[in-house]
Length: 85
Image 1 (tube, rainbow, N blue to C red):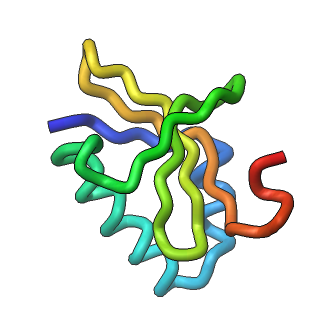
Image 2 (cartoon, rainbow, N blue to C red):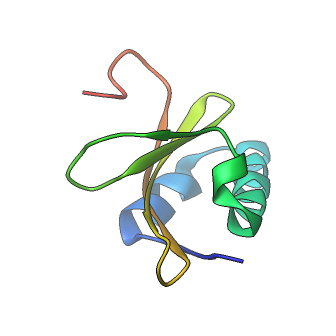
């Protein structure tokens, strides 16, 4: 089981979303902690994230360290045309 932590930026962004979306993201993160590689993960190459998780219209940008079984949610963005820029 992986330990999931949120960056300060991710927490700040998450609090701005409607409650039902916060709960949906929380459920996705709970499933992610059990086995992250069975989820809809996509490997990306940015400076602050190594993977992207899609939960509905939201994208969670993650850093996964398999050696210590830790996942850091670096930021969360709503899917728009500007999300990946």
